[in-house]
Image 1 (cartoon, helix red, strand yellow):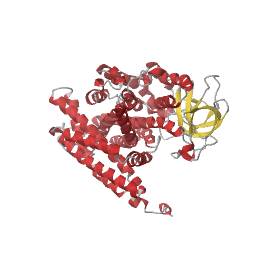
Image 2 (tube, helix red, strand yellow):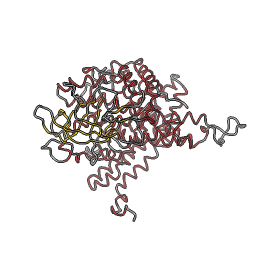
Image 3 (cartoon, one colour):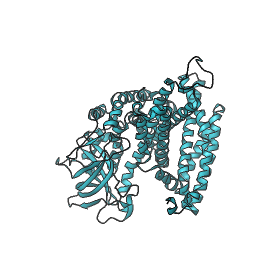
Image 4 (cartoon, helix red, strand yellow):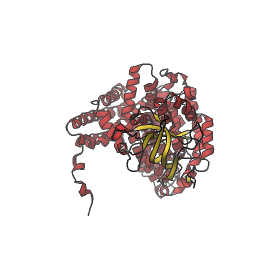
Length: 594
């Protein structure tokens, strides 16, 4: 069976030819980027992930993590050695702040590595995946002393971090959390409580773990306005003493078995306040938003990996006879790839993966601009776009990533259901991405309520107008995608108007159509990316440049997206329009059949 192959050619095409990041010099980090650096990251990071990380994937799933009698946790065989190579390679420091030992490169380049890692072994990636967000949170909210003590070791990867939010009785509704923080009189706090579902809550990869913990001070107001954020290390650096944080258990999960998902008990553990009292949720959202974008990349990675396996299988496996012209009429059966329904699934997977990769990398460029562009207006506009698209990338990306993984499993037929081919593991590993870091339904509510209605649809309409302008500017040869995309934009504009009207009259209706709105924005955003990908492919073919089969495949896939995905916008608009409608008609008791 084919091994995972990082899609370096596609990454280079998006970064170099479509986004042209090597021609940017603002933000300043892009001044260091040239074509050779793009190619080096695409190829060499890919080689590292393929050779060092990907071999861990099967053992990660079958062996899982082990909690010992003393409460310590060990990771699957090979994880410690691979993590040591990861730290030594320096790939993890690529986009970290230079002042604390990072390389200060653009976030867009690190997004490439995130995809590669998650396709190679998502269980392994969970340990380091949250580190960038943790660094950003401590950098933004920590005191100078805390930053000096913790950030150099976090940036280098010598220490890893966790995000400790969830409690057994309080999942998404953080206002219900009970973990307490009592001042100890010396500038520290005694943290007590139990947190669940903590990825990397304990492990043997690093000597220390930095837990970022939400808790309540004694005088805290009720609800989310009374939450503070604390830094609670596994070992206290100044003394080397073990903090009173212990692992109650490791969760037994559907997938991601290589990731130690722990119940953590804090028994008057020593912690330091990050930011202002009762402002912890705002500080934690720095980390949560970074994590949500990272989870969207997981959706891309699951789609890409499953597509590669299914495409190779469809080319090799012979089953049934094709209805069209057969290459060899004497054979008893043809490869699966000749059958239109198999092609439908493969083309859908390819269209999602390549289009979503472009969206992820485009958004990463906006992140760089929002933090470092010299023009304050550019920073503001980029930040608004990121805020609007974050729930879309998280929810639409993981919904479609899981859907693709299931469809690629379907290509294998019964062989996709057994373990030896690796497809059922991808499906199991992909499922959690739709749940954690804010379930996808909650992301849709955020998009409709906070990101669309709250500003009167300003950012949504600005994005839609940009897409429409690009459609109008497209050459006639691209009418096959520009025309249906422009019509789909009108559905988006109508949906914004409907949401605003619903918000003013009956907010429940707005929330009833929120999920359809999220799907509509995601479908439009990918259509926009496919217009941009097709525009570059068309121009290069017309000029006699580039890899002709690669570029022709881009145009064919863009046409597939235009024909098969953009028409869904009509239905999604209608679903926004009907709002809560019949979904709220039954009484709560009627949902139980007795």
